Amino acid sequence: MSPAEVQERAESRTAGRASSSPPPEEFVRDGCPLIATEDVGACPMCGESAERAGTYAEGYDYELRTCANRWRFVRCSGAGCGHVWLNPRPAVGTLSTIYPPHYYAYAYAEKVPGLALRVKNGLDARKFRGIVGALDRPARSFVDVGCGDGRYLKLMRGLGVPDIANHGLELDERVVASLRSQGFLAFNRRAEECEEIAAGSIDVATMFHVIEHVDDPQRVCDRVASWLSPGGVFAVETPNVESLDRRLFARTYWGGYHIPRHWNLFSPGTLRAMLERAGLSLVATRYQTGHSFWMYSMHHVMRYHGASRPGLSRVFDPFGGVVSLPALAAFTAFDKARAMLGCRTSSMLMIARK
Image (cartoon, rainbow, N blue to C red; front, top):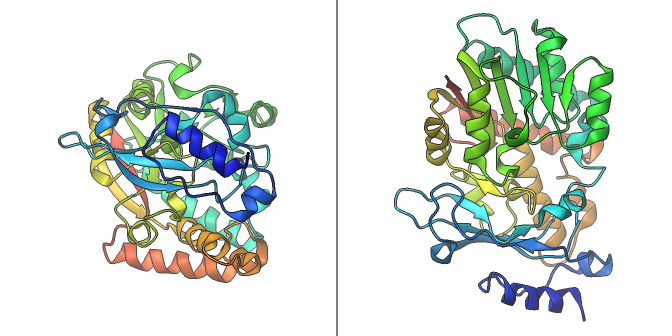
């Protein structure tokens, strides 16, 4: 039985509403496996039954091709909610499959061309100055949830946070071991299960493109909020479904879907509501460059829509090396200009205070 036939049967047993269109030819040719899934019976934000949720988008793991499943985002129909989540989603036991060792966050500096990395580091430093500026005092403690290779821990070290108060949470033990060897307080923990960070002990907490990966975002947000000291700030960056590129590539190819690793998607309204339910007050909403989402959207169209054009798609791969630098620069400049004009880009940063 082909992967497409197996997938069609699996979907008829689980969600029952997802499309049965076959995976792209590359997935079949490369023998991408079907992985176990689990249903999400209710909206993670308001608890409304998933039976009333409508299909929002469908697609495959266009970036890493870790599996041949066809995935479906749904949108909550509950009054005043509108949250978007993946249903069904990968079973917990498949996380090592959908987050393989070569996942970009585990070796970010090695995958980004030198010039682009220097520009990115400059933008990050500016972003962090704005986050720390929301404090009424110098930052003396920090936690980055989903810290990857620790680039933000190093940045905060440079801003004066001592290593004994510089925390990182990550799910890859090899990455954690490396960060510990560099002097940081790194833990192989999910935020909602972490007991090593004391309540009221953190001045600045960040989650950059992590909250969309978790199964229960409100629980995670509540947990991080409990770590904050009085006046402490929490900065969350995540894809914005109310953006131009999401509307243009809405059906399946939008890079912000990051299928199947993104389990929850937010609008400015739903993100703010989550922070406020955690007892935090919104300080600022800023729109960052969503260049990687633009590029992946174009990459997916070039590679998987109609006749495959792998050579051309590499031009739009954010980690495609030197060949992708012109597109990277163009989309970065485009979104910077749009943000200056007040447009909502596909990467939103919210800063909230306890």
